[in-house]
Image (cartoon, helix red, strand yellow):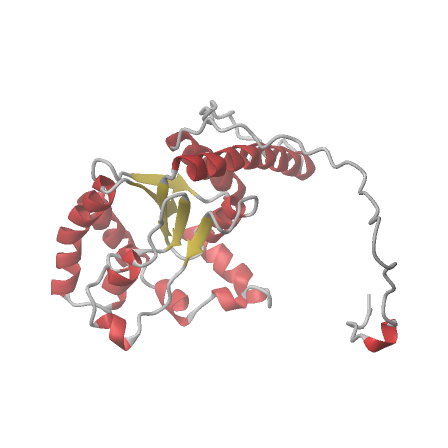
Length: 281
């Protein structure tokens, strides 16, 4: 069963100023719980059918990609659905075929791989920040459609999302991160430099979409100014692209445990012989 596209309410409960924050949160949690059930069904379908799913999450810094990925993976088995977030390539990797380190992360049968940024780094940050040459950049734009068509022909389902965030909202999120000691690690030196290159990133994004929006691997744009709405919209859309008719696993009836009939009675060693974590709380 697939998740049906619902008509968007006008205005959405998630950003309607007439709806209380408590009601908005209640609506969000209820919808997320419903989608979690569908994600479980999808997981079982992927395992049973041996499907190979690749989902790319791209967008500007602080666009909300990580939040969506986290909500997708939370209810799922990490052996089936895993996240790939590659760091800066090593000196050795820089000498390899550009796509080589990404190919190593592609799924086997019965797996879903979520790329938190992908090979499209070359069309974005590498291009804007000057980490690749003009020849490398244009070769990438020529090569990536053929590369992705090859993946699709091999049986991989390739889904690409671009998270679109406005200049004002991105700046607000940057400032929130700068104030929060638990989120400052998210502001890398590269992120700070990107604040002054909004137009350059916009031009790079537009060119990337025009060259790589191909049949079989279309780009899907997610409006992410409202994070919670973006999460629900993206997960719902992902489910709609992946038909899944697997039922939810049956409820398990846990009968009373039988006492061990044989053998000596277990006696726990003295607690003083074990090294316990201090109970501070």
